[in-house]
Image 1 (cartoon, one colour):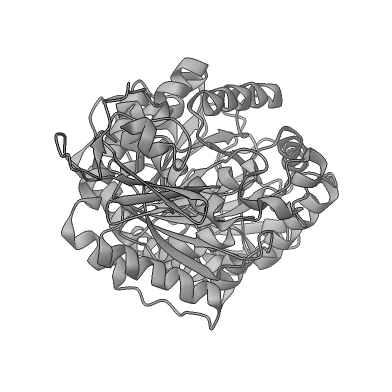
Image 2 (cartoon, rainbow, N blue to C red):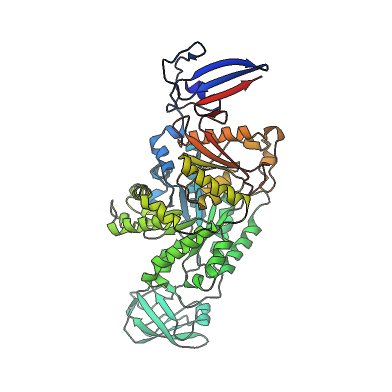
Length: 588
């Protein structure tokens, strides 16, 4: 039965497609027409029908593996940082199966060669499970620190005492220390706050000179060698990219990371700077990595800076570590919601990061407050949630990823979840793409479709579909593996990579990988083939389990037109030649 049914769309059979097929033959205009019933029950016979004998069943690949098929049942993505606790191929595969969709390579630690080795492990896992995995390379950014003290144990600063920060290279004492950053001295004004060691010591500038700042100690505490300095009130005249970052960025482009995260973003010009550097290092035939801005400075919220930063980059990370130091703790939850809403309105993926399950570095279970924090980010509408030290250096990396997935599944099963998501008003453009994607969401909800399938070149149509926050998964099909990997970051999107030459693109390698102007094979420009590919992809992902499960498909004609979406089609999983339980195939 499976072979008879699925021969219509091609591909392997699966055990879930089990009803027997009913075949009817008739002759019309020199055509043989075969009708296959997808709903007939065993034992039905008539003078014009005959029941086909049971066919041997075959196992499918990814969709038949319970651990993997569960992955397609969540919309919020999971980002896991790799480190000493998760550096082997076996552990990376374990984290993938536990729910990780994206892996973060933190270039603040380790060598470039170590990052390349991790990337190769990820690509091997990706190949094994035939599913795109995104890789995020995270640049370190500038590290602002005080100098060293004559006392190796540091000094204790008392409340209201005066303490000087200067450019003198002499070792510090209880009255002063070197601040080897003249840009901080230049940007600071009387009344500005400086935070040392993640805010454990708070200083307020009371006087300044050309080469020094005199500060009052408002929050006393210990200050010691090379402790970090935060400047919440100042916009520093420095690049977000250090010489190390520039070297790391060039290496990231060389080895092929999918996303680049930029730290220390203060203003929109910082995003323009990294785009310019990528242009310099990107080979002519190479795919451009997506840029993610880490929002961790109060200056990002001045005027329309946030909207302009979101517009210039491809995604945003709510970096709550430094953001929580430079902003009041009670402001961080509100800023998190503001960032998420701004990204959703712009159709850009947003990641919530830092201290999500911090206690799981040492404990196999999180605190209830941490579970609530993760749930809040999901309710807010974040595209992805991230683990840092929990998966990189903790004792329970697999349990941390699995716990995040459990929280995601629980929140997304809450009837209130989509009500919260729908509360954010979205402005729609007067375009065919917006009309098609909006209609696809409504149709899917009305007919209880199993998935929305979007065919895309560079991902813009899929991102627009993700912005709608549909109640079913969005299956993004693209001929470019790099686009598929970047789309992994987006809410509700599960990309699929068809074979070279499918849905209207030439199979010639040189033309096929021309990202700006993909060649179109006229003979392959067949919409029925496009729809069959949609059914095959949904089957591979385990999104459909019955021949009559419905899919909503969007595509753009002519093929090869970036951003075009002008066709919408509702079809059953059995293929474009089927409807209401009957499949027709005409052979010359």
